[in-house]
Image 1: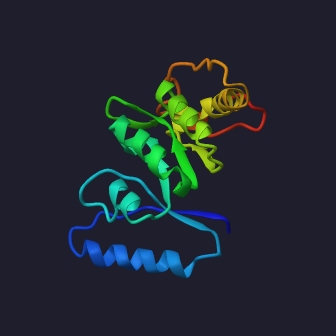
Image 2: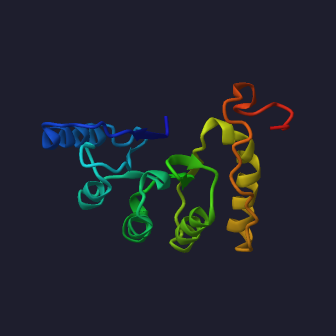
Length: 173
């Protein structure tokens, strides 16, 4: 086991006790892998991104869960050393986890400039999985050369077509 992401539940009561329980668990697992807590917005989450930064806890930065881009930039700037994993995807009108966009490239650029060496995960809705290979290639090109990235616009052509979700072995989707 190497990297494990914990999703903070929504809690109404005993937030402090729940946070302490998670901190104890992370400390007890030390050395068995990298445990990090995914960033989610919302006041009822066990941990907010601000809590994670303030408490110095490792986080999985999910770009699509944080609607304020300045918060994402600040987290990368001040906490990049404690981010083992980034879930990279764009936000649309009423939807999360769309194919990467220019802001995602900006986040990658900021991470590269910080000499970050964690894991990038492209986290897309199932009907956008056809884009993953091309977007990985675009990101690899950008990281290696710093050159321009040509991203295709998000397309819902496979929404509701479960037979097209995921990847085919021959690379046709």
